[in-house]
Length: 126
Image (cartoon, rainbow, N blue to C red):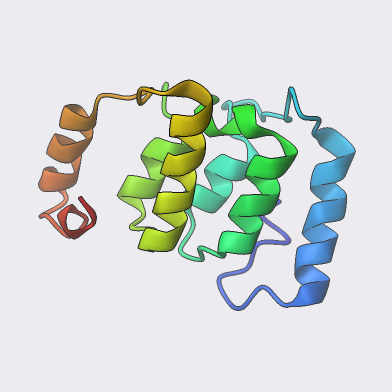
């Protein structure tokens, strides 16, 4: 996953290679997690490159990945707040979450406090 997810433009070839790799290990019910509980969606959410098509593919392939917790009990959705995703990506992820699970799976108040410690740069997204 990290190999195919550069910090530059995703280009069609790179996105297709990434899709092939994810298709090897993911179903609609489960997605591969590494030894730290990290999924491909965690990696994308933590990165500096936020391609909405990639989010749509990953969530479409395995929606449960959106609420899958890693070793630190964080979901990819929580990481999107920390990495300042574009609003269209955040809206997409929140819409999917609301449609499938309703309430948020993390404490928004705690997230706001964490973002505030980061000197407020991400608070503009809230």
